[in-house]
Length: 165
Image 1 (tube, one colour):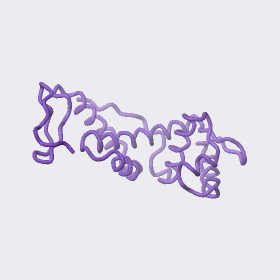
Image 2 (cartoon, one colour):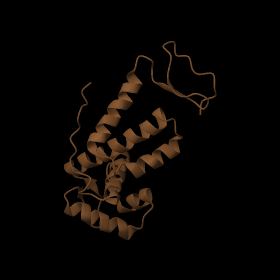
Image 3 (cartoon, one colour):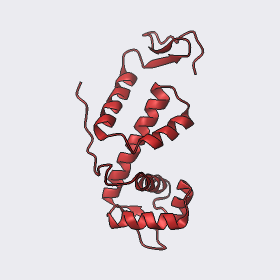
C-alpha cells in the first residue's frame, strides 16, 4: 500500500513549538472571524499581549503573517500552508489517540498538542495512513475492552461483551 505524501512547507526545525501554536491559533480564529486581533490570539493561547506582539513580529518577519501594530492579523498564503500542516498533525494525532487508542477526548487533544511539534513528517504520513487503514478495514475498525484489550470489530458489527472505556 503506497503512503500518500503531503508536502511539508516548513520543516519543524525552522519554527519553534510556540510559533507553530500561534499559526494554529490564528488559523482557527480566522476561520471563525475572518481575521484575528492580537487580543483574540492572547485569549486563545492564554498568553500576555506583549508575548503575542513579539510572536507576531517574528512571524511577520518570516513572511507567515500580515501584521501591523493595532491592526488585524491574517495569515499569508505560506503561513496558511504551514498552519494547515500543524493542524493536520494535531488532528491526526488526536484521531489516533481518541479513535484508535480510545483515550479520553480532552486527554487525546492535550497529548496531540504536545506531540504535534516533534513528530517527523514521514512518521506522521505513515501514522495517518494507518489510521485510515483501520477506519476503512472491512471489519469497520477496532474495539477496545478492558478485559480483552484491542481487537478488530467483527464483520457483523458485534462488540465485545466487556464494558468499553
